[in-house]
Length: 414
Ligand SMILES: *Cc1c(COP(=O)(O)O)cnc(C)c1O
Picture 1: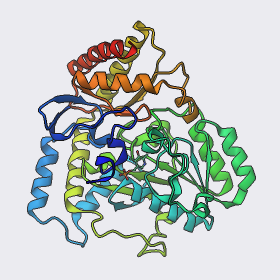
Picture 2: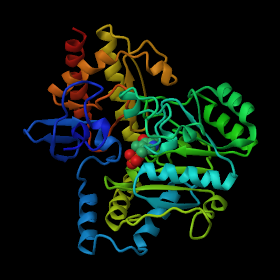
Picture 3: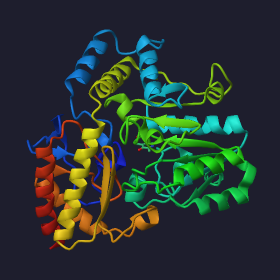
């Protein structure tokens, strides 16, 4: 019915072989397939569900909102409340605009950056994924990396030429690009902690270096925090690392599992967006009341419970357990985590960029993935995706996962 049987490529098990299970329902840390098998879920809808599946507050908020009408095409108080709540956590977003997906957010941010600077070139990093907008499908991460499609047919070469690339965690490469193209670069867009090439942390000084280089050249710095926002820390990667971008894109967690994205930043830049300014960007369902209600409910729970220290501790426990398994079984592995985002590569390491991520043993990963699934643990079906944890995952779940993963790795290693 749909190409490859899925409505988003990463859902097919192309990176690990086999066929995806079909989901019946989910609750807390667990997901059930249509055959009645259940799995501890570390995919969590690829990031949004930081409170786990079907959190009662989120479900209730959606129900109450739906009863009042599903869409109006006119502004609502919930949009203002969610924007204010986001700005509380991410103060660099002085003004922001809601859209319906992370892809829309990044596409809109780049259009705005080009308009504001009067320049056309964009610099992105190998293995970073910024949604499926034409300008970003150059050496992209996530499903693009999993499927080994460095560039997508259908993107005009004229447009691809405007997207420059450099390896992540390499400031000299960025400086070289800026030397070559000095005053033609509108923006640098980066996942401040990479979650779409596996999970890769920025090295000390890297993000401040990007800030310095872009500021000196009059280019904008865009942090794509669609995945890291409200995940690695309440204020996102920019809060954790103390670097202030000009523009930020959000998605995933801010929608509580409904389709939401947002872009925002310095007022003087955002004032270029229509109808206040000339840069056109619109959406029939943008700021949808159900989506706003779900996002508000989730962020309010996060504000009240401040689960980040606990999430960080549990995520560390998981990654340390997985690495201990590998060490015990003599399998080379390296891992990283921040907040509730994490990743493990079956590689000698260190993994500091996409090229080194590619040295990981993807065939072993594929066997490990299936062996985990058989034991009731659902990790992302690709070696090049980050994992997540939710507040619904308890220590016992994590410990059970580590035990399952040890058996799975023993079986996968052969
Ligand atoms: C998921 C993701 C996107 C795209 O968001 P969609 O809602 O899938 O369009 C963009 N950037 C990053 C960093 C992401 O992780």
